[in-house]
Amino acid sequence: MSHTTTAGPAQLASAPLRITRRGRVVLAGLIALPVLVLSLVFATPGAQAGGEDGTVEVYTVLAGESLWDIAEDIAPQQDPRVVIDRLLRANALDSASLQPGQQLIIPAGL
Image: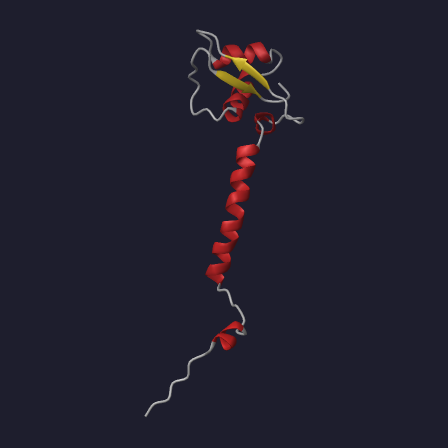
């Protein structure tokens, strides 16, 4: 006859909790994900564009304007190619095509 022993609630409660490596990675991800999402949601456009105090300049594109025109207008003493690159990065633009009425964030220092 075999004899089996079952652990009672008192014995289970005293067992130490152990977490595996995969469990630690999942737990860290669950903690880090909301922090990342909240920081992206509540970041001000000025902070994203490099504004120190959170203020930001916005430029509204007129009909027929190109990024080159805008770069020459907002920073006439700087190389337009550098200004265009900063505008593309600050506004997360994939291309240089613009639409009339589109608003562009002007990076700090331009």
